[in-house]
Length: 156
Image (cartoon, rainbow, N blue to C red; front, side, top):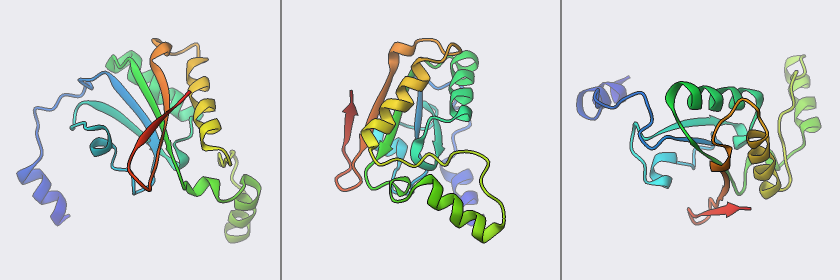
């Protein structure tokens, strides 16, 4: 709370609008090594940032991108996953079993694990491009962020 008070007093800009000025949505992983705004040279108010485990394009990501496009006029989407992602270190089945053993309940949805980060990025981009609910699908591109050197590489 003290850090938020400092932010509110010193750095918060109430003039930043709710419509992303670069008309950009970024889908990426929740990994704490990824500082999305710094990585892309962006400032607050320039992009919608959607984060989840793995940067996987889930039903909720499609919903959020759709709303970003239709309500906030975004037109470009970057899907960014990264090297050394936790989701690449186990399988859905193994993690679901571990969760069920710990909690007594199995996850009701796929966890999104993968062994090929480029393939996972391609699948996410394709899922967005094939959605009939999105516009400007030619501006959806995929990338891998290298956690060892901070560089992005486009996945084609």
